[in-house]
Length: 359
Ligand SMILES: *Cc1c(COP(=O)(O)O)cnc(C)c1O
Image (cartoon, rainbow, N blue to C red):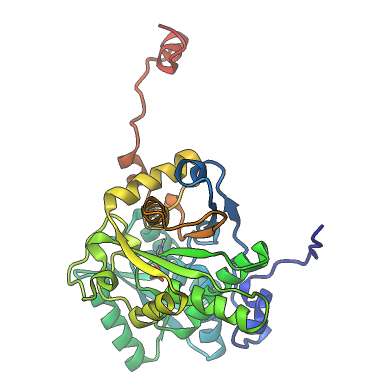
């Protein structure tokens, strides 16, 4: 039996300190992010491809409900150690939710630029409740990022978008957790691709464990973009990206070249999936596995299904899918794609009829 030493969990910076930039104890800002479950598929793999193993790395269970917290703990801790008094980010939602929470915990200011009307209610509520200055701009994410970068350069406010290298450092800890749990790297690691930071971070993490001799084979990195926001797949900037999956509604990814390197070095793929396909797997994950994730997260399963239909996988392949954010971020979307509640008069017989137990 595998011996697991029980130690108090203190967040990703302490757990993976040997693989992360040095940060003094007193500067560490953590809300105990990371340590998320790797959930083995119980039902879906049988419906799709019984010969492969599917695991969901459910990043929706981070403190602010997305994987962004892994990078934010490192970025904000570094900002604190450098004496920064404020952070700024452009965001499709989750970066702002995370930046706001970590800045609040650190006791510094946060400024958030979001595209007007294109951010899920849950994410907006998070930035607001944590006390950020939230600015809705009449533009898209890519335009907001340009402004945030300029202000950061000129006014000494720390930018915490994934152009901040510490974000990717923190985010790679998710791949460490996967390998620590499986005792190996998966054959395939599938992630949604928006700004392309996460696919880059995972690949870096896998390579670092490989170099350290902790694993003996690397996975293939597979990324999926929404069809209406697929600059890497189409090999051109998309001026007006559109998709229901707002977290990956990005037309000019910051880590474009790094994502291509991750794809090519690993022998993987980056492909596109339609909104219709990803909404199907969004409901499927909720109804067949009990996992409520964001539409952007469900793109991983939609992509896996596509590849599986083409006969891409072989028997025994281990596939890990990162479910990047929690479904509660955008409850309206869940309501829109689901059956409506049934209106029932307030008596037992009517309820029984509605249940199908009485005709
Ligand atoms: C940020 C985010 C993504 C995209 O990740 P990138 O690193 O920008 O590619 C996907 N899903 C969710 C839920 C996110 O918050």
